Length: 495
Image 1 (cartoon, rainbow, N blue to C red):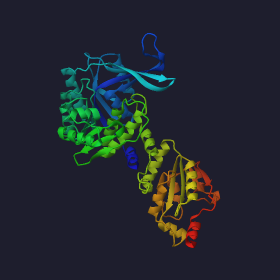
Image 2: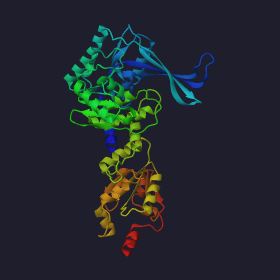
Image 3: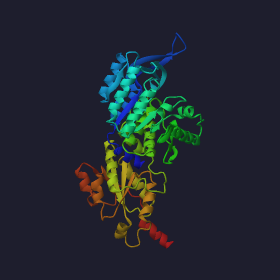
């Protein structure tokens, strides 16, 4: 996960142009108390009404929450709902001068009724849609094309959110693709459900789900191999840079024209509501690509954001801080025999530590040779980790161990010692140091808690005064009696 953490930290503020169907999502919340006496239906005792943006405007909302600069182009009616949409967009600082008013159609509204059983566990009970699915008129279509051409000059990437409500006509798609090609920027489309995808020809990529991809290709997508085949077929048929098929809880399939292909899985989640997951996936995919990520990295990050979305009720936003928090909580070592996912150089460690601090996490630090790992070490590191939310371990290099312990040490190389420590859940980060003391590491990490063994007095702990000077504390961890590396070596030599 470390490369994704670095990607989030370097996302910047790309300019994203969103084109598509603007919607208003209305939620009516309440307690599902009993069955109605009038009909065999659940009686919802409503206590809250809420409005959020959906469709293309949901994508714009999610991007704004992710600190992108966003322009939205779409259509609303001449009604109260349209005024509500524009007010929300203004409050979110989403540019929406390109949102056209069509007097001949209503603003698309999806009204959802959310019931709580015994005042908890909210679940969607019913959805009512107010909409027109007819293509926009010629005059509105022309205005949309002009707005797209105008906004394209400021965009880093274009996301097309097509919900088949009449905005993404072949002419609007053609204007979008032509303007993007002229500027040399990518167009990513979330397509409609159907067999004819010809209007998307020339997009950089698309994000159809399993059913949409199956209808478009004629393939039954019931295995990972079939998903990759469908992604490859879409790529070839539509001239895409990369074919993508989203597979809900199984992740995404990718077939890139450079030969990169495969399944990018996601981890298991507690799913409360899948509403908005597709919008979130496309939002983060587009944001990451606009920031310079390659497709595999962008897909992996989009999987994380989509997973966070389904853990929320309704169409909800996810922040960069939430994504970082989830990445920090994920297992960081795929191979317990490899230290590469926890080992950091100092220049890379410090930004990750600062990101954790912005999430409210506290950092503990300890250091040592950890030559032959034993029970005493394990209990010591567990106690060090218990003092904070994250443990950084400074590990002596082979040269520094020889300086401290003599020419016969270390028994295990620094690579081996790092790999063993990386297999411990208590250890979040490892950093090698070759100095006589870890004082430079302590200055850089600025731990909230400095941990050393109870065989030291506080005035003997290197860095204690420094840590306490900015409000940190020193913790002297208990030692397991009878365990030491030196003693183990002596016993082995006797044996």
